[in-house]
Image 1: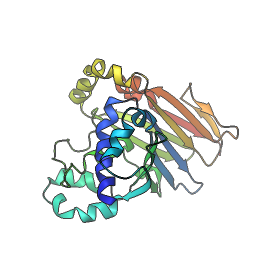
Image 2: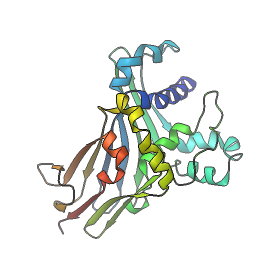
Image 3: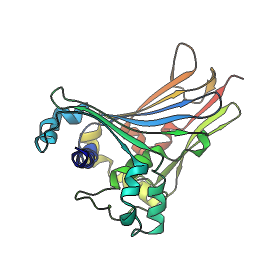
Length: 251
């Protein structure tokens, strides 16, 4: 079961870029500044397209399983030690994350999430980069994936940071590799057919009411403490700063 689950994870990640992907970045901040952050993937489209194929190599029709990266990286420590120091540092950033899959191949349903808890939102790194890093940690066959990605750079050459200082929350995107970013923009036409209907949604929950925000298209919960902002995945790839958000909370 464990071996099958890890193989399934590899297959799922490999399929992300050939089906419509709906991601939700969800954050809950508690009054003391601690909280929980997750990247959630709705795999319904993937299961509609390839659910039977995903299940045909194993007996599992339904599952609800979790990978603890701290345990996984401990098991793979000998392989990790053979990677470059930069790659080792990037992989180490995953040790506080867990990954969950709830799948029902017959119902064509799958929910996939990568999540972590934090003591301070300022400690959070780029969640999507971590999500992408997780997809490359293990290659089929059980070995570690080759060291190809540059240190601190997502597949789009961008980096996302989060901060909460006083009553001011910020989600800011920085282009850290202009050449890599331009390459990703140049490739948009090739993925338009697959990702044209995909979305990326921010769903943030704050400990106090929202006084104002820079996100003009955002929707708010009835109690005024939650914010939801959805954009096209294609728009996000063309302009990662489309999800830059500043929020001012009430005192």
